Length: 522
Image (cartoon, rainbow, N blue to C red):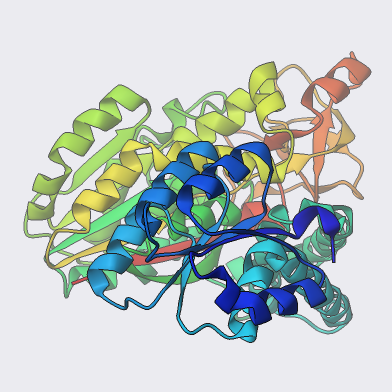
């Protein structure tokens, strides 16, 4: 028993009748102080720190609820367990409103008391020990599984499991398992990259069964819902990782029935390629071939290269012979004030057969963090980055839109992303001329080169269904957590971009992507 965490105050005007219970607790190592009225108890709490208080509801003089209110003013965070004979609903509601932690019905027995104490005083330790044991078992299972012949579904499962463990261990940093988990994630990503590189070409050329890719998302998940639903909302949250979504999902349970599936992003896992593929239903080389007027020219600019998403989606619906009851509604939210305007009228969107809404904040957050020292300080690692996203979502117009839509009838919400991101920790030297693109996780140009242990070299872009850009260009795409650095000023840029969240490469975080269906609860 941790002596720092075993100080109990029991308040009851018939305290002598509880002598056997108090002796039982003292036998278990708890130090129990006693008070027979609220006034004395309040003075004791002012002078001494307690870990938990048992409080009788019916006492002569100052009653239990009044005592509780004053105790909470003195020590707001101390757990208070009310002990009562009264089972009325109104009392329970009053106690909960007064921030009671739990309650016990008289007559109480020692095991009930012990259970409450373990829950509040030792619950974290017990949960941590159980979590640690379970994770070691899971660590061994995943390590053994990676030695087998995995398919794309197995990697989806591994990514989900590891993401869930990362989030659970966020709550227990004292276990010291963070580095172990990170090392396993790194090992998994190395093996995933080998697996992806072996299979990607055969998948996209349909030479072997594979996952759904970016260009199949709308046909697979959105179009079927248009047949049966009055209004479909298709949200694309740019640069959203699975762990970020899972935090957002927790806030939506009260409003929606939630189901989740997964698809694989295409490479490069970057907006100009992946999001255009989503809205057009085509790979980038096919967009360049069939719609050259819509394929933006010039350097990779995340905004200008995605100016034609509405047109791409309209052409996709035409090819699939999907007829909407009214015009397609397309909205791209790039900044907060515009988002507030959309929030104020989102309920009227349910009159539209299909609404496509792109939300760019998470992508902006990732890019801003790369160059903002304050954001780097606030979110130095994945756990903090998750927390930052969680805080944003809690107060975002996106969350408000979801809550408003949860009250609508006969609608379906599909949520996905075009790619994720990864925290980059290792530099990879890259060579290229002045025309080479600037992204840190992929490059294209006439003379780009890098170490093939750190990046995939693509000699013929059409093999990977990538655009040739009007000439002979090569691509290099980073693996795992590498990021490209030119030899010029190598050490400056190596340090400047280390530990930043980037996208465009090959990793589970960037390429295994959720597609979520939200059905409003009745």
